[in-house]
Length: 338
Image (cartoon, rainbow, N blue to C red; front, side, top):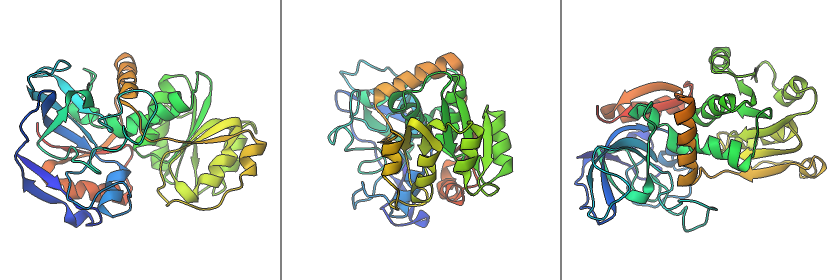
């Protein structure tokens, strides 16, 4: 079978298509024919050498993929041949709190990921995918979807009527927009593109802010919330946005730290947290249990994720380039096989 492999820091041009043989199945392992993969900003960071939790050897990239079970080990009980499944971002984080041990082997980083025609995974690392979703749509869930779910409803503990600020229109933000809308939350979303903001409104955004029109967009957030601020911010920008995100959240609210598109570090005033009884909460994707909870929610609401572009397997480099150019709305995906 064919797969892509990369060493961290080799850039997009370093993505190499190779021939590999799937490993023999152990008692509790499952062989999956991968049908689709989706890309996350983490995948781009890895190829550019800006992600710390990876090794020096070449690995199959990408954490997010979905496919069909085509063989099972002798003692597998959770799945059968023909089942439609997706891989959990952390194969060993099943439930409960994150630990160094259960988050050590994220797919596509320190261990082989999903950008291959076939993958072998432990049965505990897989979840069944909702029947209303295509493989491409299901491949969009494991990182961005679970991250949004964790931020909104696990760490964020939001309830119907609460408000959330979403930065940009990438995978996590568009997932959060759709989940929040379905759960009865008020949503404010930012972008530099009026066209993307129009698409966000079509997905149910309560309010939108063009941060080129409003460079001090935290003031516009306060204006749109009557001076109160939002209950939660999904912070994906990093040092370029964190101070404004803290200013945007209301008394007792939370800033969920998810990523750093503009890099990490920078200064902020800790008294802004103390005086407002605000908190920063790091979000590191989520457990398999969260993935399963999200899938039940998707099964009821029949949400279809926002997929911007789908590339064929042989154009994986072009898919990465599309992600890097940041013109997408939602997810960039790769169809591995029909």
